[in-house]
Structures are given as C-alpha cells and as structure tokens.
Image (cartoon, rainbow, N blue to C red; front, side, top):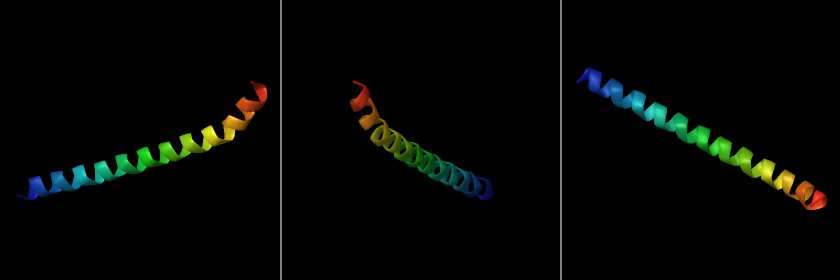
Amino acid sequence: MKDSSAGSLVLRAYSLKLEAFLALSWGLQLKTRSFLSPVLGLTA
C-alpha cells in the first residue's frame, strides 16, 4: 500500500510539473509571437 501511494504521489507531482511547464512554454510562445508579429509585419 505504501509503495502504491508513493507512486501515485510521484505521478501526481510529475503531471503537475509537466502541466506547469506546458503552461509556461505556451505563455512564452504567445509572448514571442506577439513581440515578433509587428516586426514581421514591418519586414514583410
């Protein structure tokens, strides 16, 4: 029982970390896109 609960805790922490990483990368992608769009509009 202890091993299974520890495994589920590790899995939950890993999924939360993955979720936070995805949200962070998505936010950075949106930021860079909003920053590059006027630059691309000027150059194009």
